[in-house]
Amino acid sequence: MVSADEETADRSGPVAGLEEPAHALVTGASSGIGLAILGQLLDNPHVAFVAAVSRSAGRSDALQALLAADPERLMVFDADLTVEHDLARLSDALVKRVDRLHLVVNAAGVLHSEGLRPEKALEQVSLSSLQRIFAINAFAPILLARALLPLLGHGAPLVFASLSARVGSIGDNRSGGWYAYRASKAAQNQLLKTLSIEMARRNRRTCCVLLHPGTVDTPLSASFQARVAPEKLFAAERAASQLLDIIAHCTPAQSGRFYAWDGSEVPW
Ligand SMILES: NC(=O)c1ccc[n+]([C@@H]2O[C@H](COP(=O)([O-])OP(=O)(O)OC[C@H]3O[C@@H](n4cnc5c(N)ncnc54)[C@H](OP(=O)(O)O)[C@@H]3O)[C@@H](O)[C@H]2O)c1
Image (tube, rainbow, N blue to C red; front, side):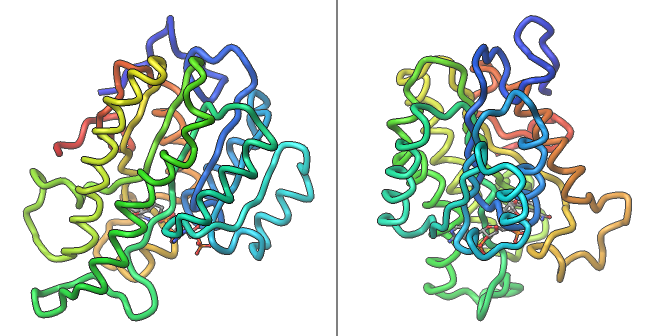
């Protein structure tokens, strides 16, 4: 369980123990949980800079409205996180704006898209859908970390948080199905657990965590909400504030762990 450590957690700042204005990056910022997290970071006066990233960020009305209201603090950037050239462009653009990042929230992810549905049975498993889902859910977060490396080794507090999902838990898998999504989240968990160990050497004040947001009312979950009790379906704003609260209490002691929205640990 993540608990508020009164000595280390700064309740008003987005990252525990940070003694300088925060620089953040949010992926998946054009929709759902990422967009809600971005809005709440921009509402926080301790945040001096946020980069908002998605493939369609530049075409998002919501992001353009936020940019018009706060052009000094917000950078909106189009990047496909599964394309290494886009990650390199993102890194180049960031180093022109800031010398460090204190918070990275990776909220980009896919459950379904055109021609891609979560599998109900083995017959529906295909190499192309496995590759598409793994590319964004599993490979993108670690490639993002590699691209951002010049901005992470600064020695100030750093939280690298990535959205996972309870269905990615191998220990908790009782109902089967959703092969590619489940496995991609499990693979992400292992890649970022491994990152947490290396980051402890590169910046000993890093907390690298996986987060399960609960079931959240977004385009990703829209077709799968029929059997979710209304009280268990969170608005994106509520999920964002719960996740930002966990993030604000993350210290190196929590690094390499997998937390649910209520602060409880999820089994791998
Ligand atoms: N909603 C839930 O109930 C729920 C439950 C458990 C876990 N999660 C996880 O939470 C995260 C956020 O989900 P959400 O519900 O907020 O989903 P969402 O509303 O569908 O948003 C997904 C975001 O990912 C971006 N994205 C997708 N592919 C991308 C790519 N190749 N490169 C860059 N950005 C990409 C999308 O923007 P563009 O299309 O503009 O690129 C969009 O901003 C996901 O990792 C999801 O697995 C969600």
